[in-house]
Image 1 (cartoon, rainbow, N blue to C red):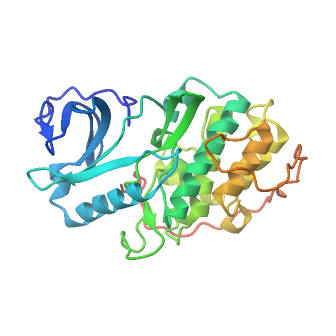
Image 2: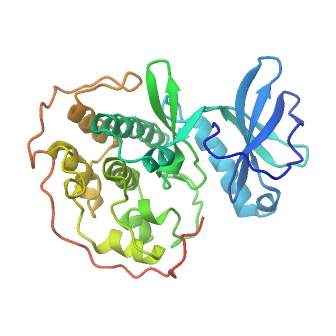
Image 3: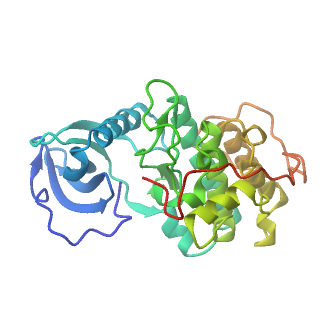
Length: 331
């Protein structure tokens, strides 16, 4: 990861130290509830990398430690030009686990959206890149569960900007042991799918819903559902009609509006059934192929007429009782 988050001002005892005899810690660049991220340099290779270390307070809790270890294994298993690459892992002298990632020099998609709505072609490109990254996550039998603009880095590459997904702290494996208690609600309210909010089973289509929220934000400059309190925002995801981005931005093409609305369907069965399908639809809207993504395997669709992708449903679903207070979802 790169310097999308301002370096923390506190003096960190790890700064200036040599980790695992090969990573010189230069600065702390981000801090979350479970870990800290540092900019490090490999002295021999003279290469900048990013180091994520579990915080001391989190390391003392068995459940969080187990989640961090799963995060490492999952991130290392994903191979995609649209997902941050893990290059090494290990433990500090005090036993805390860490992993080393490529250093992404750029900004978060949240920073980009703060400057205003993206041009339509750019929004389609960024959306398709995220979808290709999600496809790699899903092929690893996992669901990201916290896809949001601040977890997407936009970095400059030789052929232009590219999105890379980061932060698999609450990603859920779709096979193997459970990592959260039944009924737990994890995620960020503005980007959570209805089934995620209702603590029902989630799968790849939950990430596609979050992708739809981000697409809407890139096109209009705002999230599709928002209220003063987190619980009220969650209720909008559950009950409010699917919004039309053309009401906020007249220049939004009909085909792109339909892609966004299909991603935001309340029922998972009515969304795109795979991230690859969402990526292909976005690429066709812009008539563009992702050079880092898989080649198209179907004939070009041409311009998508209104209703061609999916008939917009006007239905809403009933609010499923969720044991939540008006507070941010647990992280």
